[in-house]
Length: 167
Image 1 (spheres, helix red, strand yellow):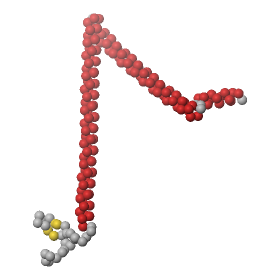
Image 2: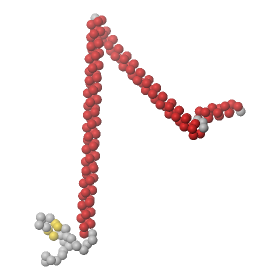
Image 3: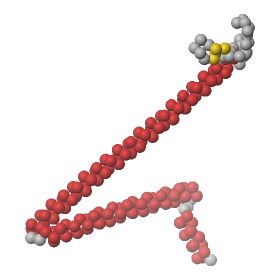
Image 4: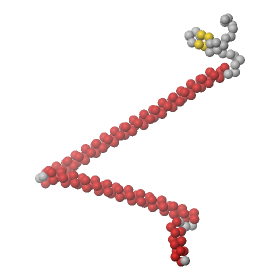
């Protein structure tokens, strides 16, 4: 084959690879190359987005674990402080009463009653708050019904009851 002759077969390039053949008259000649280039850019974009998602996930997990570590450390400090305070109170009562076991018993009971009372007060306040929110929600709905219809469900029921009582 002579060097001036065009061939449809790939020709070895100087680097040892295969150089693509090109036909100058083919309108799709550059399209395939640009399409492959665009595909590579899309793949790189998708890979970057996946890596960014992984980074954010790792950062979120790290922050959650760090938060849990701080919570555990704080809980440990609180438990230690309570134990030391109760121990000091028990030893003081023991010195005052002359019997350490009675002081330990009194301190433990005072602690349990205090915790129970605090939880009871918190629970009652929470129940009152929820009840108040529900009552406000129903009152708002009755006000809306009065504005829209001229009466609310409770007034309508009372009116119907009095009408039936007359008949």
